[in-house]
Length: 96
Image (cartoon, rainbow, N blue to C red; front, side, top):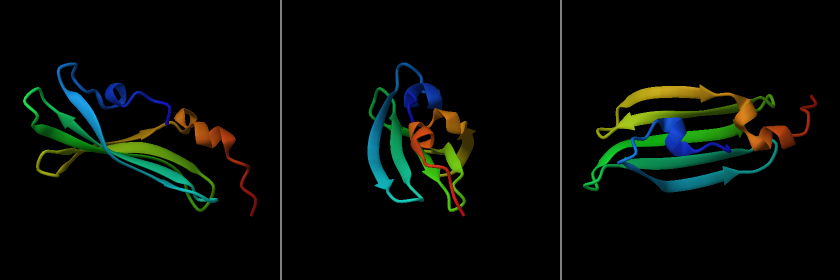
């Protein structure tokens, strides 16, 4: 994804977003995955975010993210247009 995660997640200016983990999967079913933590000025984790940019078994690009509160409860889930994915533009056409 070529998106600013702070803008995408709506992080307030006085909070910080820290990248906790990043993973990639190659091949025809490639994918990129990120985990972020939103931290307030006092260093307390306010929320966790999981985001992804992937191609499924049918060659369809999927992008999106999930927000969890500080207790780990899912509070928001969004799908992002596949046009936000650089890898989707580089993906070869799917041939069955």
